[in-house]
Image (cartoon, one colour):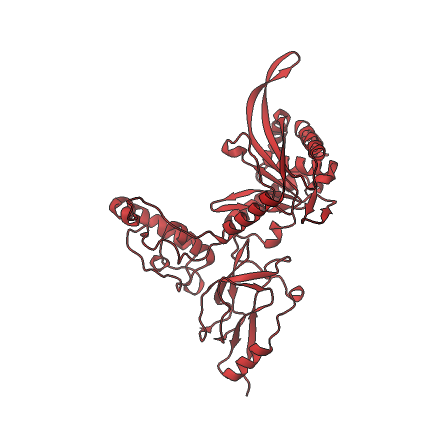
Length: 429
């Protein structure tokens, strides 16, 4: 009697996903697994997700190699019952054909993050845990969620030292955070333990491989800087009326507050509608002109940067943009964004004003053709009716890809953006 044999394939974590890789296997060939058991961590360039067994069985045959890209629908491993013979398994693998990615349903992302990092097996193995003890070299077999592994890697704590509270005895991110908090008093009481990571040179340091997200950022922005001839346009805008508008909109609000950045995103979207030649994508040979403004907004994370997209921002109210941005920012920081929420932007707004940065140059996020860098608002004296008056001024810098956006086009956009910022009640119409 033939045994039941099933293929476990590369899942589709977003509509535009075409390939992914196994960052870490949690099982080995021959292991018995239960339905719903986490068997591997799957990574794309932007997110990470756990791969779960869809039914109970035994992992048979060989496993897809870690760190190698596999197309969506490609075979990762085989799940079979014990009645299946080796010959049947081998025949199944030999006859297997990758599934058509267009027919694969997008998987629900439970644990996702743009700063996904592989378990730090290559990290500095002399670094102590916060408890001051020398940890075992390899905790890769400890059941843990991807976010828990990232938190443990950042804190330098071994998962074997963490008490698990997750399902099926898995360590969660919260478990790691509790372990780190509990270890702080011990570390303070034994400062000598902190010197264990001292290299032969006598200097303290730690090593860690680049995370998947940092590798992607490095690759994409290097390519952008090298291939796209950047030019920049700088404009100053009087923020007094926008600050007043924010205060007016915030009165009586119960669910969160409108931020200046929400208003700037709306202003950028409205300016893109006035100057649609900036609202484009460019792949090196073809220009895509969009009827709607899909504004990506930079969100700073501990280990990098994500740019979730406010789609159709020109058609949404400031209130809608504010609510959506709060939710996207929250999920970006918790690591639960979908891949599709990070793609498709036609323009990016990057605001470092909250860090006190007055002005900066931003690198274009391909395939977009422009990015707006927003600095801090500060009080300055400006000319007024033959004299001077104090005003809250903001500096904005537009970086453009000169292959497809000319200086005059970029200048018209900045002119429109400045006018909307200085007369922001237009944004409510």
